[in-house]
Image 1 (cartoon, helix red, strand yellow):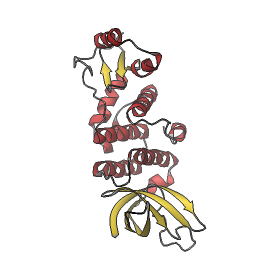
Image 2 (spheres, helix red, strand yellow; image 1 turned 120 degrees about the vertical axis):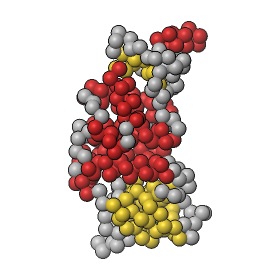
Image 3 (tube, helix red, strand yellow; image 1 turned 180 degrees about the vertical axis):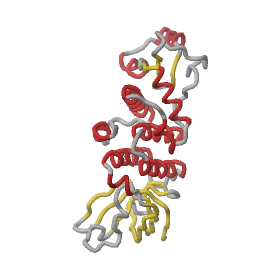
Image 4 (cartoon, one colour; image 1 turned 135 degrees about the vertical axis):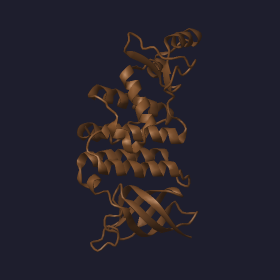
Length: 267
């Protein structure tokens, strides 16, 4: 069967002397792995279409009994030239691609996530400041699309308004996915007790500024996330909180491979 679909290139691997195995995130078919014959040859017809982050119209031969399909054609729909030429933008784009790879599966399309990825790449191609906010906003919007976004308005257990402890700090309950008031936190500890391992997830504390930034990044459209004001400490706390949250709810046992690169070059 011949399939034509919009896609974003997630990653590629060398295969043989001149070919590539390419992973696509398609709009209507989810994650698809294809063999691009001759893609690394000097006169390859694909050009830059199979580079990570490229938005393409892909045509491939699909057979249900095969895990790797055969790519016939790939044409660039939208070139992200700034992303390709700017190291900070490229690093941010690579993290978006990794996030989508980690949460996607073959044969399970999710148009909203696909469109979020396109919006994220477009945003990186247009802005040069606020890239960390764009990345965090992207991850939060993906979590929302997949149904595991944090609930940030009121105590996650009783719904009462959150009063910061000492006027500045808020308890963020990672397993339940949101801030928790002091009374509920104390009751849960008394009722169930708590091991050291459980405390690792439940004793997370963030500054009230971080909670405010989380709310804003969840609310504004992704294309405007770079406008959310965040100082250096808030960005670091946002990242550490989201890293723990994803690790628990996505069951990611490893940190993002792009985390160190993003930390070094995306400011």
